[in-house]
Each structure stands twice: as structure tokens, then as C-alpha cells.
Length: 81
Image 1 (cartoon, one colour):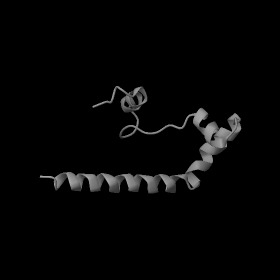
Image 2 (tube, rainbow, N blue to C red):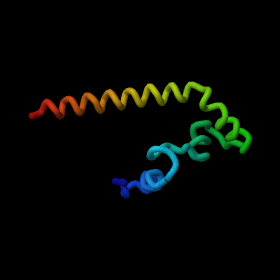
Image 3 (cartoon, helix red, strand yellow):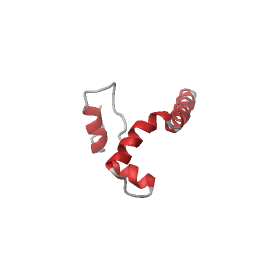
């Protein structure tokens, strides 16, 4: 079921590509994190560099933490009977 209260989630959920919703980093977000405006070439360089940076490892660490928290919550919910 699509969460229509979040228009971005609704758009991502409706995308045919991939297995489900994902995350897109906007230029605005990239520039906010960079601390200044970026040229088109700098954004393209980021696009090429990110897969080889520590960002995928950081996402893995964050995702594993979320997964473990979900497992703990599901386990405690199952023990509440």
C-alpha cells in the first residue's frame, strides 16, 4: 500500500524500475552536504565516485542497524502475549 501522505514515497513507489522505492539524492541535497554550489561536472564526478567511496559501507552499516532494530521490535512484540 502506498503512503500517499508522503508525495515522494508515492512517486517512488509508482516507479516501474527496480524492486521498490529507493532514494534519490537531489542536487540541492548534494550541494547542502558539500557546503557550496556544485558545477555539472562536479555532480557528474560525484555520481561516478560515490559507489567507490565509503558511502555504500555507511549505508550498509545504517541498514543493518535498522534491520536489527526491526528484529528486536518484532521479537518483543511476539513476547507481549
